[in-house]
Image (cartoon, rainbow, N blue to C red; front, side):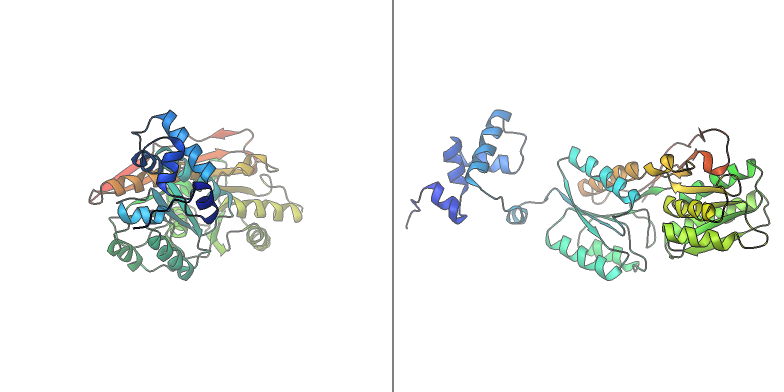
Length: 362
């Protein structure tokens, strides 16, 4: 047997640095280096720092994929959403990362662009990288059979914001129907009787829940006027839809929007027509993104807590990884109506939120 006697410096240049090289450089055993690489809590901080310095100096790159083949977990979670560019998803992903970081996990993020085919490619690639679980906001048109497919891969899945398939399943979201119901109720208190809804055109659970909340609220308050207009959930769509609505007879005195982006567009459209949001037509958005409080006028919005949804989804995934056969859980956060000038209220206020609800099913 030929022993490799080349110095660590030459092997560093060729990319063949070994654990033994690191151990010799740091003055520790090879097993200690292995524990540091696996982030074991058994290694003293002083020793860990010394080994990490040696790793950096020698340019060693840990082959986590090979290590995963030898172990049961990779401490990674796949996250698949459909529009990472929106403020809502930015906040939600930040919540996911915060919760995972506290447990030593990292996430692999993918943007499906609401394409089931693109989503499938990401899921297959994440499976190849042996992620421990998936946080999935299903793309529009995703077949319910996908959940069974992930189960057959022994890949725990928590659905986020949208859901497919039949319960029980792990799920984290906000109560969108209740949020719309709150918005309608507030507008009715302000005297509005013609309240329109600017909604998304997509056929998925989150959109349907908003529509249902709107319909139920109208029935609850015995309102005869019902106007549901569907389009892209963008600023441009909000602008175009409000211009169409305000030309109708009778026209609405208030609109509730699928999200804040549509609401920003609706307020801009009103201004272009020489109308004042909150005076000539009340506007309420959904999500309460940071820009809502800074818009002109400040936007009344249903806070749906994206950061908290991300945290709850990550916690659900970690619980499922630890207990694959445990009871399935649904964590649905209560929305809160943040009242500002765009709905015509004289002063800012916040409607009290109901407690967070968490339903566990088996």
